[in-house]
Image (cartoon, rainbow, N blue to C red):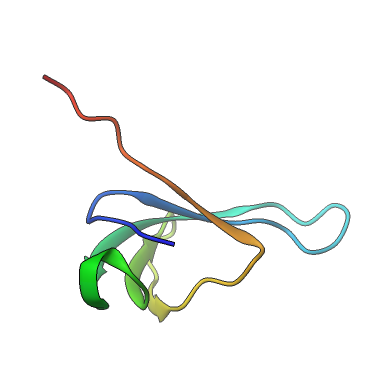
Length: 64
């Protein structure tokens, strides 16, 4: 898993009815884009996380 600042981290719900959690990656703390990441969730909460298999990175689109 590799990410850059500004990408989104999506943690999928683990049980039926649980919503996905979406956070913006504000800092990449690992080497060459690897975890851990400092993330900011939609409610403003920040955390450091190492995403598991229930997560995905959505890369920001590069605008030319």
